[in-house]
Length: 186
Image (cartoon, rainbow, N blue to C red):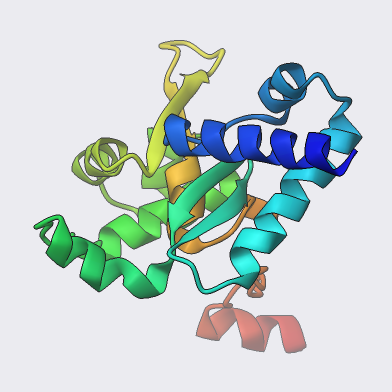
């Protein structure tokens, strides 16, 4: 029995390595010919083994499945070995747009612009080009505006497996105008 488990873990490892992208639970379950709970247990055991060691590779759970990726602490050496330039950090505007989308997705460009109070066309296009945001269909309203949401690359960059892991945002009480406070107290 142990050799069968070892073989199936080898299959998971090979599929993750060959894929380069996240592989879904449904796909693994079909390939391994196992039910989903058993498949999850097998993948989690393999991921635990990878992630407990100081190897250069780890297995991460993302919203749409599992993916094999390098450890963040080796990023500099990987960039140097592959002659990759460091990505430019995101601008404040890009971070704001990402936050609005992540906490409210799916959203339209008009919603993001309403929240931020400025045009977001260029920033949104840049985030789509970087693979951090993607189109998620169209809203059933006149003009059928595009809906946007975050991607698995966004989750991977943040080191989280789902948006549920984002920190909660405290809602601020509306700020009253100076004259309103005096009117409401008397």
